[in-house]
Length: 222
Image (cartoon, rainbow, N blue to C red; front, side, top):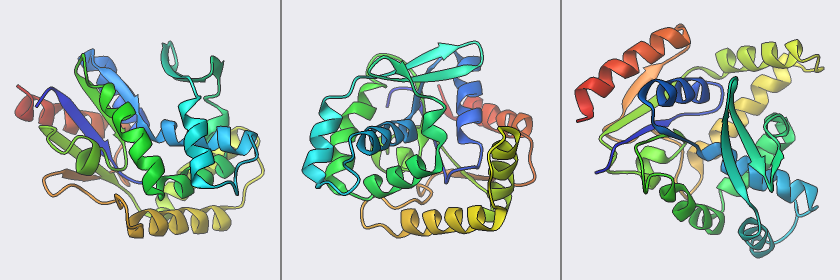
C-alpha cells in the first residue's frame, strides 16, 4: 500500500489540526474529506436543493471545482475558485453535510475523488471513514475521540471568540445527535477501523497528540 495515514473520528476531536501539522512536518499531501461533504452541503444550500432529490445533489457535485490551497495559517478550501473556508464551519452546513454523508449515492460519487488524492504522493487523510472505507489498506490508521461535552466546550469557545451567539446546551445536544446519526447510518458508519490506534484527545494538547502520532509513523510507515 502506498504511504497513507488515515485519521478518523467525530467533529471537534482535533483531526484537522493534527492532520495539517502532520502533513506539514512530513511534507505529505493533505486531504480533508469532511470538507468535501461540507463543500457539497454549502453548494446544496446555496442552490436551494436542501429538499432536492439525491440525483439533483449528485449532479451538482459533478459541476463543482474543488481545491485545497496551502496558506501561512493553514489550508484554504476553494469552491469554484472562491475561498469558502469560513463558510464551511457554519452549523447549518455541518448538519447538511451529515445528512448528505448518509446517502450511498453521494458517498459513491465522492469515493473516487478522495482516492485520487493519494494517486501521486504520500497522503494524510482526515475524515470519518478514511480507514474503514476509503483507504482500508493504509499502513497507519488513527482514530481520535473525545466526549460530546468536551467537544461542545471547544466549539463553544471558538464560536464565542468569533463573536457568535451560541447556546452550550444546544450545541452539546446537536453534537450528540450528529454522533448518533453518523454512528448508526447504514452506509460507512462512524467507527474505528479494526486495526486503528484509538487516541482520546479530551485531556491532551495538540502537541501531545502530534507527538504520539509521529512516534507511530516511525513504527508503521516504511
